[in-house]
Length: 316
Image 1 (cartoon, helix red, strand yellow):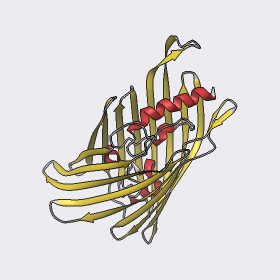
Image 2 (cartoon, helix red, strand yellow):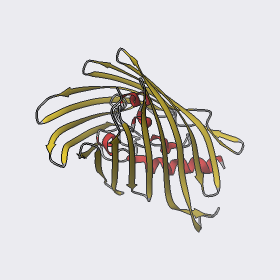
Image 3 (cartoon, rainbow, N blue to C red):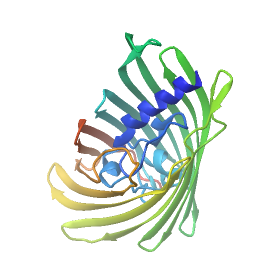
């Protein structure tokens, strides 16, 4: 049964090759869908987001970044990837006085249908693989440029009729010094996914990086550049670079963002584009739409749609 779950992890990892910036290969850990990046914004920046993390998606990148969210914010992401992979998530961030922010998220991925075979290799039907997580996080601005966040989640993964579940925990830090921001996070800490008599480790991840932001009063609203390194359990160190250019608009569409990212990967990394990109618009000051289309040479196109709405007054 352990071998079956590791085979599912291999499928999820291959399906998760679209997570920009990282090698998702092997099969020694479970719940590898947790490594996937599903935000069109961060995906367009090569997933170099641990030191940016300034919106609701910080829940998945660096919980400390939630402290930067100063208005109520809700988001939906939908990913349609090669190999019949579909991923959905919903996130809500809620600022609390004086310097706290709470957030909750739900994400779900399904892979398949996959082919079921008997001991001789003959096809006997199909089955589905799924992954799900329910997450909560709390962040605080500690002052002097320092922000801290913690999160917890319940993770569930299934292969046909076999199911495993486990708790996991995240912790993150952000430090602002003028235009420079430094971030670090440890994610997916936990006892492992319990399956019968076996406990399969979670893909614990340590990541750190830096970003630099320049703002102006002209047509160019801001330029952000970022870099990140990441180490996932049982994998080599990986890295990524990203940038976002924000332009002021007019009328209904008052904001345009253009993004590009680059992944640094070793020869064993899963296939996928080395260069990523996305774009987004803001409508009527409160509604954001972000899109990414990433080509895979042998598997097809991955499409990502992210919707965000901000509402309520800003935290004082």
